[in-house]
Amino acid sequence: MYRKTLKISIIFLYLIIIAGAVVRMTGSGMGCPDWPKCFGFYIPPTEESQLQWEPNKDYTEGQIIIVQESLRIAPKDFTSATTYTENNWATYDKHDYAAFNVWHTWIEYINRLVTVLAGIPILLMIISAFWYWKRRPWLIFGSFFVLPLMGFQAWLGKQVVDSNLLPVKITIHMIAALLIVALLLYLWYKSQEKESVVGTLSRKLKKYDPQFKNLMLLAVVLTLVQVAFGTQVRQYVDEQVMVVGYDAKDQWLNPPTVMFYVHRSFSILVTLLNIYLFWRNRKYILGHTSLLKWVLILIALEVITGILMYYIDFPFGTQPLHLVIASLLFGVQFYVLLESFSRKREKAVTQSIPS
Image (cartoon, rainbow, N blue to C red; front, top):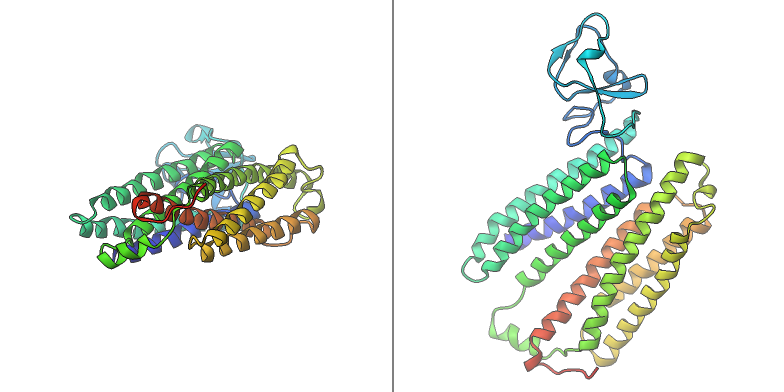
C-alpha cells in the first residue's frame, strides 16, 4: 500500500510540473488573480459578465469584480444597491493585473486543482507509512516531511500570483518542486531496499566508485542550476510576448539576453559531464547503464527542443516539453545518485574502484 501511494504521489507531482509548464506556455499564470480562490470563487467564472458589477446582487466577502480596468474586492458580505457604491468595495492591492480570459482562468484553475488532488495520495502515503513503524520508522518521518513541503510549495504559488509572476519567485517555485521530487524518490528507493540476506548479498556484488559518485552529485547540481537559468530565460520570453504579441514568435528571443547564452553554453558542460559518467559506468561495470541511457536520451531531447525553440520560432508544445524533460532528467539523475551513495555505505563489503 505504501509503495503504491508513493508511486501515485510521484506521478501527481510530475503532473503538477506538467500543468505548471502548460500555464507558462499559454501565459495563464494570472488567469486567477487571487489565491487560493479564483476571482473570489471556488469554481471560477466562465464569462466576463460574472465579474461585472450588478445591482441588487448578493456579494460575498472576498469576491472580486473588474471596475474600470482594476480589481475591486468585497471586504464583507453585502447586497448591492441600484447604483454602484465605491465604499462597498476595496481596491485589490496585491497587484494591478485586471483582465479576464476564460481559457487562462481555467488553465490556471486546473493547475491548482491538480495540486490539491495530489494531496490525497500523499495523505494516504503518510497513513500507510505506519506499517513500517517497527522495521523502518524513519520512513514515517520522511513521509510526514513531504506534507509541510507541499504546504510551502502552495504558499510559494500564492507568492508567485501576488507578485504578478516575479521571475525570482517562479524560479524558487520550480526548484522547490524538484526538491519534493527528490524526497519522494529517496523514499521510493529506501522503501524497496531488500531486508533479506539474499538482497544484501546481491548488493555486495556491485562496485563502489567514489569519483563516479562525486561527479554524479555535480551533475544533479548542474541540472538544478540549468533549470534555474532556463526559468530566467523563459521570463524574458514571457515579457517579450507581452510586448510583441503571441503571433510574433520570431521576436520572442530577439535580441537574446546574456542569460540565454549562459543557459545554452551551460548545456554543453552538462552534456559532456553526463557522457563521461556514462563512459565511466560502462568501463568499470558499475550497473547504472539502463538509467544513464535514459539520462542521455533526455539530454538529447532537451537539446532538440531547445534548438527548435530558438531556430524554428517556438513550435507549439516545445516550451512545456522542454521543462518537463528537464524535470524528468533531474529525477533519473537523482535516482542514480541514490544508488551511488548506497554503494558508499556498503563500501566495506564491495569492490572499490580507484579514483
